[in-house]
Amino acid sequence: MSNNEPPFTVGVEEEYLLVDLQTRDVDENPPSTLLQVCTERSGGHINPEFLRSQLEVSTRVCHSIAEVRTDLTKLRKIIVDVGADYGLAPVAASTHPFARSTRQMPTEKEQFFALAREMQTAARRMMVNGMHVHIGIDDDDLRVDLMNQLSYFVPHLVALSCSSPFWEGELTGLMSFRLNAFSSLPRTGLPERFASYSELRRHLDMLIRNGVIENTTKMWWDVRPNPRYPTVEVRVMDCCTCIDDSMCLAALVVCLARMLYRLRRSNQSWRWYKNVLIAENRWRAMRYSFDENLLDLARGELVPFAQMVEELIALVREDAEALGCLREVEYSRTILERGTSAHRQIRTYNEAREAGASEREALVAVVDFLTRETARAPTPDPAV
Image (cartoon, rainbow, N blue to C red; front, side, top):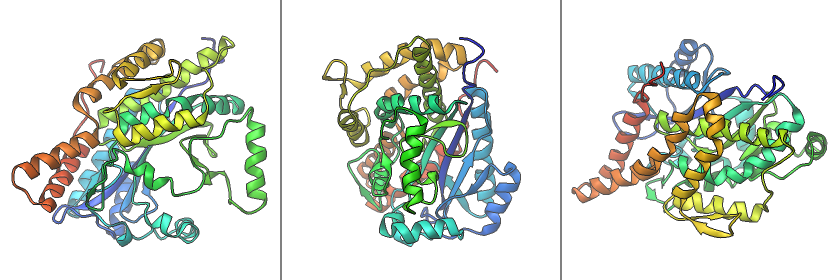
């Protein structure tokens, strides 16, 4: 492609809960010095989130998935090391197996207090963590165009990232309960389609002008043009427990964006489908992950997700090779073979129960699995 192509830089944000290593419960009010030390050691890349028990990490603006892996590994290790000094550990999963959301306290910042006041019970249930992937796109209209087209792939990304099968001690039957909880907030889910950036702005400016929202950061769609940075931000994924899984999802997102840009350069675009069909696949992905078939919208029939993954790899192979992340894209096959974090959590719980553990002991076993996997170093890159 020409020198005019977007930078396709990558930035990743992840949110973690802090758990007490003795009780395995979430520490709803960890020492403020823990956050201060983490922020200082990370150079400002570890920050508070909505709840006091939450931390958010953000990588630098990276020029390769290898750089993202290095950053994310470093940031997780800082929290693991600092947390250990306080008897705490991070959990990279979208929900905690048994902690109570109503016991959590918002971080002492006015923006979080304002959110709690407006959203009420919906906000009090927000003990959930996500993974956000930013792709550098330096053209307003292109960001909107890619948002429109990336929506089709939202269910694929959900299915590969599920990490929230438990909620307050209950095995929910959903592989991504986080999306269920998050949907109680307004302006979430699949984005509307817009013909241009100016059309998007006209609609959002109406909401701002009437005081419905303060600014465009209050748009929490699955995919959005980020309101602060020149990026397309994909926000739908659960927080991956294993860093290798995070790298796979980040690689898929940037490769899909580049593939869609290639189509645009050839005056083509991904076929447009109604949100009602994409939403059905999104629901099936959050309910089953990849244990049940998804709709192939071109064929108009249900197909195995493993088949979709092979088609996805073939679709973005050129882009993965150009961006140096084919290994990470192909790691999606490993996720299928081994299971997502949600699959592994359920497996850990069932094995503990079958071995005679009580329900509480089995849930504790799941927390132990999550803290181990969160701290585990990623698979070394053979190219390094």
